[in-house]
Structures are given as structure tokens and as C-alpha cells.
Length: 399
Image 1 (tube, one colour):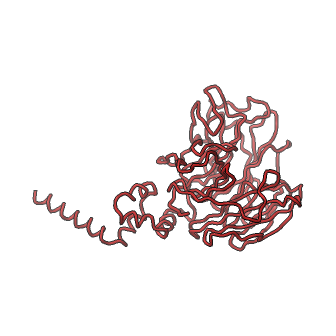
Image 2 (cartoon, rainbow, N blue to C red):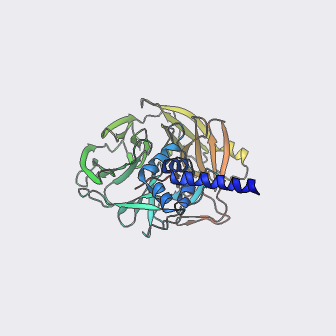
Image 3 (cartoon, rainbow, N blue to C red):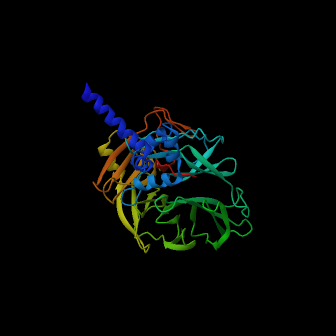
């Protein structure tokens, strides 16, 4: 009995030592998972103060990186349309992944535009943009720069640049077309650090044949990259605030018209997946950009027929000119530098792991699930709908 009492006294003494030593307590909290810290804000005012401190939030994110890169815990799956904030599906990449809630956003309809290292940028049907952190259930509303002309007739695109391993601040790159001069664009930048727009930083022209998609920007190595369909495309160096070019000529392709391009990155490398328009086509090409941006290198031609051999329940190629898969994205593997190519095939989320050279099943959405305005019953298949994947990173980043 005396030994038990002595042990309890020792534990109480250790707890008090930690409680009164804020530096030691901070070091312990830095090592805890993000979800736990959200709950631990309720422990005491002291813990709330520590966990809510912006410097702690940055330190916590940087403490949990792996070889200079953050790892997503889930993928958000959403259609290409405005929907109520609550309507999306989630593909867990970690066993503890939970659906982040958007109930704190009161806009009737939003559309996710981009995910970037823990923050999301969404477009509201109310003609504004929302910078969101789903983990902390916080958002900040951003309106377009005053000099821009926001309408449905001209192109107007925004992209998010955020790297919490380098800076706690983010930037929004806004590109809009001059409605009085077609193919002439302006580039403006919003900085969260200064809480202001840098107006009319850059003016440039894009030839009609180049067909650059400014909507789906990919942030990689401190730069925003845009997918192009001509010989060249553009990327914006966020730190140096300069617009540069990179090649888009592909070394090989199938003898068929392109159907879609999926642009992404993994561990600081750009990737491109190209699907083709054929009566029955279950193949697509994967390309990798050289690190010096000199050229695209063909990496592999993937055949969904091989996936069907592994998962015979998949029904692919049964609808003419509809391959039955979409939403191709790239995520990092757990240990190696090679990426995983993730896609949605007949309601199943499967991936090709370049490390192992094999198809794997990540998740089964199940029958009768709902994504946005689309409802799929038990006898329906994902042969007609296009989906987008947005990586979700659990983090405490402040807005």
C-alpha cells in the first residue's frame, strides 16, 4: 500500500513538473497527432493558449514532415460543379482518417478549386473565394482584386501557393483575361502576410493554340504550374514573382485523339497522365517532368485491363468511348520516391504503385453513394461522371 501511494505521489510530482514547465509541455505537445491536439484544447486555458499559438502551429506542421514533404491523410472526392459544402466523399489514406466537416461555411454552394499542403481554396456561388483549413474548421473570405473584371465571358482563375515548411503565409495568384483584348491576361498576387493585393504585376498574352488551363494549378517547388495543350506552358515562380515557360511536347502517345490530361505532383516532381478517346480504351500514358524542366519523359503506359485481372468485379470498357475511370491523381508512396497513380474505376478507388509495379485497391465507395448532385444507385456505374481529387492534410495552419 505504501509503495502504491509512493508511486502515485511520484506520478503527481512528474505531472506537476510538466504542467509548470511550459517549454517541456510544448515539446510534448509538438509530438502529438493533429486530431489529438484539437481535442486537447479543452484541457485547460494553458493548453488552449499553447496549441492556438501561430508559432506552435507552424512548428507542429514542420515537426511532422517526412524528408521535406508533408503526407496527405485522405483524398477529397468531388464533382466539377457547385454543391453544398457538406457533399463530398473521402478516401482515407491513413487508418485514422475522418471526414472533415464544412458545416461552418454558410454559403449555399461551393466548389473546391485546389488543395495545397493543408489549405483549400474554394469558389463560392456568391462570387467570392474561401481559404479553408478543414482541420481547424476555419476559413477566410477573399474577394477578387478591384481592377479585375469578374464575369462569365472571360477567363478568371485563382490558385493557392502555400508551403508551411518554408513560411506560415500563403499567396493567391489570380489570372484574369482582359475582356476587351482576348488572349491578353493579367496576373495579380494576394499575400496573407500583407493582407493585400499586388495589382497588375504582370501582363502577358497566350496564343489561342497554346490552350493553357489556368484553373487547375499545381504548386510544386515554390512554383504554380499550369497544364498546357500546345508546345509550351507557363509556371509562376512565387518567391521571385516571375512568369516562366516550360515545354509541353510529349515524347510518345497513342495513335488516337486525347481525351483528358491529369496534371499533378509528388515529392517535388511533376507528373502528367494522358487518356485517349477510343471506342474501347483502358490504357493511358504517364509522363514525368525532368527536374530541370527541360523535357517530359515517358514513364509507363498503364493498362486497366491488368487491374481487371486483379479485381474481376470491375466493369470497365463496357460503355463505348467511356473508359469507366477518371479522377487520376498522383500521391507519394510511404517509403520510396516513386509515386502512386490513383484513379476511380467503377466505384472503386484503385492505384498503381510504381515501387511494386502492381495494381492495388485503396477503397470501395460502396453502392448508392452521393457526391455533389450525382446519386449513384446499386446498378449504376461511374462511366459518365468526371471527378477531381484533392489531397487533405491534417494540420493546424492559421489563416
